[in-house]
Amino acid sequence: MGKVAIGAAVVCGIAVAAAAAVVVHRKTKKSGRWVKAMEILKEFEEKCGTPIPRLKQVADAMIVEMHAGLASEGGSKLKMLISYVDHLPTGREKGLFYALDLGGTNFRVLRVQLGGKGRGIVNQQFEEVSIPPSLMTGSSDALFDYIAAELAKFVAQEGSDFKQSPGRQRELGFTFSFPVMQSSIASGTLLRWTKGFSIDDMAGQDVVAELAKAMERQGLDMRIAALVNDTVGTLAGGRYNNNDIDASVILGTGSNAAYVERAHAIPKWHGLLPKSGEMVINMEWGNFRSSHLPLSDYDHALDTESLNPGEQIYEKVIAGMYLGEIVRRVLCRMAEEAAFFGATVPPKLEEPFILGTSIMSAMHQDTSPDLKVVASNLKDILEISNTSLKMRKVIVELCNIVATRGARLSAAGVLGVLKKMGRDTIKGGEKQKTVIAMDGGLYEHYTEYRECLENTLNELVGEEVSRTIEIEHSNDGSGIGAALLAASHSQYLETDES
Image (cartoon, rainbow, N blue to C red; front, side, top):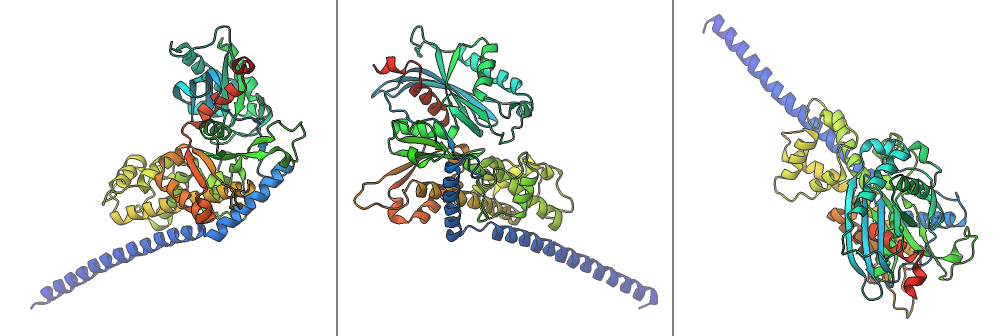
């Protein structure tokens, strides 16, 4: 063999070896990236741990805060607001009533015809309207004018199958699902915005007066009979149909709970004790915080960058507005530090809140063998294509970690409320039954979350007590509940019941 040929063979051999080395290097690099991605996931999973002893600590911390919030205004991160609802609907209410339900990025207007004792809700109709994002951070007049105009349109479409008694003013229950300090059944000042709203000129204003002025500007003659928090509305709607309902929980964009408290157990209540001896308390439990809550760096960063840093910490780990965003933040770190989606971070992945919880739940609950729902959502929402099945499985696991933590912490909150009401144990000889009304899109549509919550609650209270506790889906409790509370606080009530 000549020198040239030998030289060529050597060069060729070096080239092959170099190519092989590149392949090995690529594989090593790839496997190194995968190891790093798995480290990030594992570390996050450990931070999100919710063993039963920890959940019991969360429930006990919740009770301590409940007592403090009932003792004095500002005594706790839990506001424990007095709702001024001391008599819930009975089923005897009669007539046509309206409700306006403002609780998040949509609001609803509805009307119900109540038939009185034994007849219940004879007819109902509702419409849902989206709020333009610009109005969520604009002025109070702009927001309420938009709402009042939609309400006026809805009233104008009242059909002949709805009967308003002659000579009577229409009455409305107003569900306002933000923290409000109520001073009566039909007045209350806004404490602060949550759920992405931030309208500076509204803080400290009476929300009923703001709506009433906007209705007047629209020429709409309607009396606001009750200002209702969505959770109190859910409790009222549930009680109308089931006398055993004593508490309600909303799990939707945000989260909250309400329950029936004995009036003499509210030290900060200085008025006359109500005849019923009871008072519905709006907990505003989204603002609960405790050192026992398992929080990760992603949760702290989300909170710091939110519109309300330091507030609504519990809500930020359990509610629909935030779950998908936590998933996005973890994926972002995996993309940055472990090149999970390739050499560059997908630009869409860097957009806050692009990954809604509805997308997260669709991916989490994907039962197709090749996880095609995960693939299509990554492609359509985040513009990430060519993902491997292995990667998609990791994303499903990440969704599972976030949803499981949220659902189990929600169950711990429910345990706290049950304990405060003395319903977490069986009392000798008593036939005991406690029903909790639940509502909200997260609870209704995210099956994995709902089932995890219910299983965890059973685990927390034990088999015997779990047989006395029921969770009932109170569909549209906040809207119908507001109409029912307008009916039970109607200016014509005595005429109706006489």
